[in-house]
Length: 114
Image 1: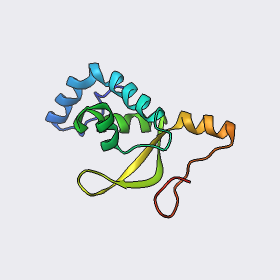
Image 2: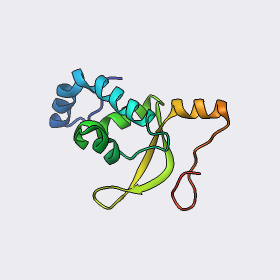
Image 3: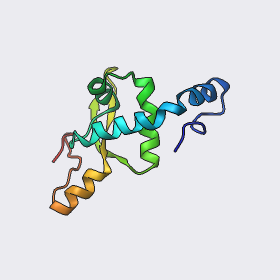
Image 4: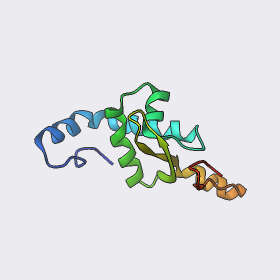
C-alpha cells in the first residue's frame, strides 16, 4: 500500500504523500516490528518514543497498517503526550500466535490488558 492516495485531495497533503512514498514501506515495517516486540500494544506516541521517530512520520503508517489488517485497536486507551486518550495498537500476527497458544489480550474495564 503506497501513500500517494493517502491524502485528502489537498495540494500540500498530496505533495507530502509523494515525498514520503519512497520511505513509507520501511517506516511501516519499523512500526510493525516495534508493535511485534511489545505484545501488550503501544500508542502512536509510545512507538515514536521507542523508535525516536517524529509522530508526523509514523502516524500515517498506523492507518496504512490498519487498512492492511496488520494491526488492530486493542480497545485499550492510554494517555498520550497531549493528555488525550490514545488507542493502544497491537500487531495482528501476535493475535494469531497467541490464539494458537490459548492466550488472548483484551481490553478490561480499567483500561489495562487482561
